[in-house]
Length: 406
Image (cartoon, rainbow, N blue to C red; front, top):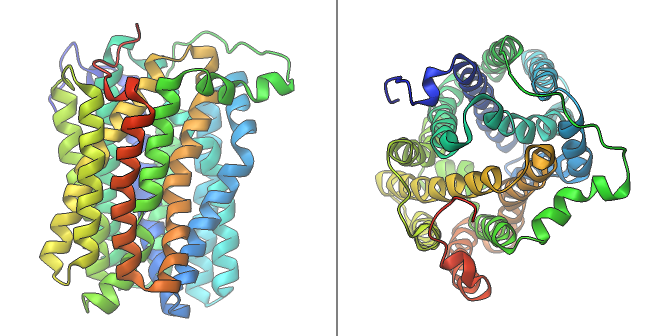
């Protein structure tokens, strides 16, 4: 990461606490994701069951979005995140005990994932709203890129630890993940925040739906969030990686860890570059170019039968996706007032979860019908088609020059 200096978010102790919590929780989440994917596929050998993992992670987010945003705008956001991380630690310990004693099977795994995803539904959007409270608004793009790069570092190390550690036993690697969640909890609980008390509006249907209304009234935000939703929804191949590692590339858990880590390698390198450099004066063109590249890389991965080529395609995919993440997150934070940020971030997180977890369910369902390779190739081509349609439907997004609100 860049060396700390007086104009860097890394010079702020609160941001360092935030980054430590972000990396720790992300690392634990990635370890659990890899271990659960391999464990479920070992138990059933079913692509549909892999898709159900994504569904179990998405449904709590979809059900809780309106409540999450309202809670984040009314109560202490730091405390909300800390409570959620504690719940995730306990749920991961449940998976560890079950695996060590051979209890529960797939029903217990899915039930525990629902509990963890419910906590993550509150944690993920609330955590992002802490950034404007700990750095000046002018630093938000750099802070967002650093936060993203920290998450990507976790996504590199997490799958590697999960894949290699699974060889020692699922129960032990779940224990490691639980310890990381507790470390993240300690970091966020000890973080100092200088923020005015939240504005507690009366709870009404209008305030509950305020985040959705805010986004739909601003075509720039609507275009950005919906573009990411549908593009990544179609291009989500993550759920099928156990099939590619075991059946197509004829390798073991180590290959699954390498495939899961590859997108994060590309994303981390791109995020670090974006933390140092400006996005330039053609943000819209950069965004659409990145999504077209994402679709091409997904298609190449689907057709590959070589581990090096598959890893390379996923690295490119991750780098392209990182540009979309930084643009989307910065636009939301720079164009949303603080008293609305929780509700808008909750809707943003729902879109991200839909594109990731629901995308995994879609990939699993499609793979069960037509096979893993056709499912990934169809998704890659679909991503490119969505990028083309959005360039036509949202010309203001295509012509976007800077992230700064007018």
